[in-house]
Image (cartoon, rainbow, N blue to C red; front, side):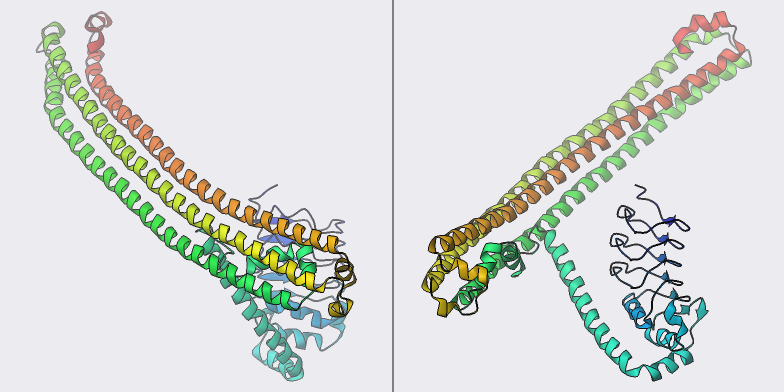
Length: 484
């Protein structure tokens, strides 16, 4: 699938269903006009969509677009919408600025556009025409009561949206500490929702509900301690990561500065040698001396250059090796520190989940005792659902359901603890391995950089010597060999 696709036009086809677009998460514009689509659906994944065109289809209802929060332009004209109040659905899109609606059956009603202009307060252009404040005011006077109800519904939806975003942000924040959904009763409530046996037995009500509430309170109190510890541990880990990065960055800065000093020293030593070689070349080109007479000077100068280039290589490599060893010591200690922190977190989490299992065992025992009191008592069971009534008439069946519910809950608890441990260990392993991989790559790049620099210096020196061969016959140049 084309995950980087930004605009897709499928207009003028025979498409009947919107489908198979889930992977196009980067899509900004989608044109499905002039098709045979009857229902808006399967757009949930297209959260980046800004322009949606559904002109000339067979759509009767606006629905299934709640996730399109970035929608800016929407065309639903020439469809089969019969009730103009259907367009109130579009009030939820806070970024919506342009709507095309012309051509729907309800447009024959002269009140349609009065409603649209007053209800869609954020829309600037309706059917590509600018909506004026006077036009909105006319609609408000006509639909005052309806608009008040819509405003109240929007206010409620807005509060729910804000609450949902705050909750999701909190979950995301807790996820950094591996304890998302552990800070309140949501997880234990979810556990019962996923347990049909336990949910059925809860319908008995009475004192069982009281025991259930006590169980939730015990769970929340237990997990509150884990969440608090995990949050503090997260802050400690972040500080440790920052200290490690600062240490490595400082070491790198020191290494770079020392390398610059070494290169500067090399350049100072190189200058007189280059001067000497230029004098030799000048004497030769001016025919003040023959190549045989200059050969000793050429060889001496070349050996001196080789000496300083070797010293340069040795000094740069020494600096890099010391840096690598220094970073290696820091990485080893960093890995040890991270391991100790995660180990401590897992120890605290094991204690918390162990306490949760104890609470679960106590709940199961209380549940069995409460149900046993009602076993076979048709009067006390009152208006219990038929399936529950059947269970409460058979002791073995009731006991089996209690045991099955306990097993379901224990597996749920085990799975959540395994998730925490797996994610925490994987995070540590990825972090440590990532620092190792980054340092190895940095070291290799630095060594290659040193060799490239050394080779470049040698090539420059060789080019300087080779300039003499332009005026020397091939036999003489061959006699001088490697010096040229």
